[in-house]
Length: 136
Ligand code: THU
Image (tube, rainbow, N blue to C red; front, top):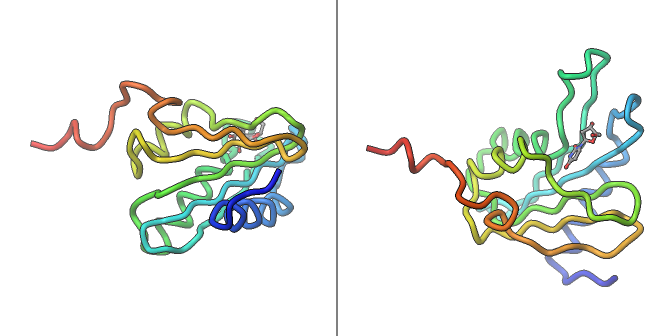
């Protein structure tokens, strides 16, 4: 599978950080990379914890890096994990992405041994609740 240049940059950033995942309990290392509104790429991996519910998903780590870096919008996000089935963001992370993205925002899901799935936030989280609901 050949990615377009912009997607290749995200893939390489996500794979590089995936190698640093702390996933001793699941053995399922995930990497995520965000192209943000400042033109920069922010990446994160999953960070598990012996107290299992305290673990962080890769997407949450990438979003934290983006916010800490000063960016505020997700233009595109790529998620990569083991196997050949595309790794899709969990329900909670779909909502986390929603905070900084909108329905058309591209999401690329990849099992690193297979082909990517190109989807959007609106497809993964239809009829979503977001910041606009709190504007008055
Ligand atoms: N995980 C992610 O980091 N992102 C996803 O999109 C799916 C799941 C992590 C959470 C946990 O550390 C491991 O994968 C197994 O669920």
